Length: 206
Image 1 (cartoon, rainbow, N blue to C red):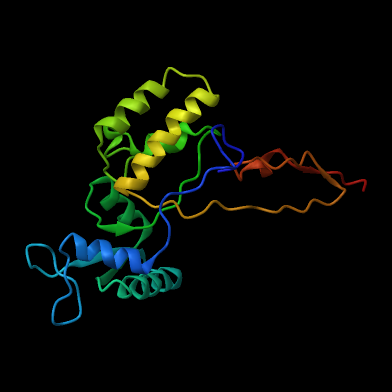
Image 2: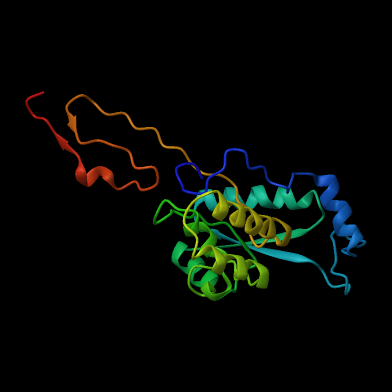
């Protein structure tokens, strides 16, 4: 995201939204639509994806959204709502099929995001449980490189691997707007963290 070393404003994803293309790919790889209108695996078993959501109204809306989306490609979706902590626990154990998560960077460097898919971080921060030999090799190569164009090129290669194998789909990064009154002392928004309030004071004379 913006504000992070490795960010590229010119980057464009190679994974475009196309219901038609998605249906064609599923057909091509023998995920055929059965008599009941839902797709089946190449072995002929029902193809059902389970989505883990939070047990909140927002989680319910999320489940409804993804069901409507997957209906378009004839994939049956079921939702299971649970507390946030239980969902994270299942992620760490590689026991989730489909789940959305937010990531708040600990430091403003692309490494903080790329390490999420490093094979040796499974059960730690790699909640997608993704293991890919070439990705891991490139990640290890990046560890000895300083921030800059050469390292960014390595990260672009890693990103394309993620797009092709799709252990995750990046959705968006958020923007925050802050309004500070003249009597607020020390306000300076951090590009990532949202805990700057401890450094702020009030000029009572104003």
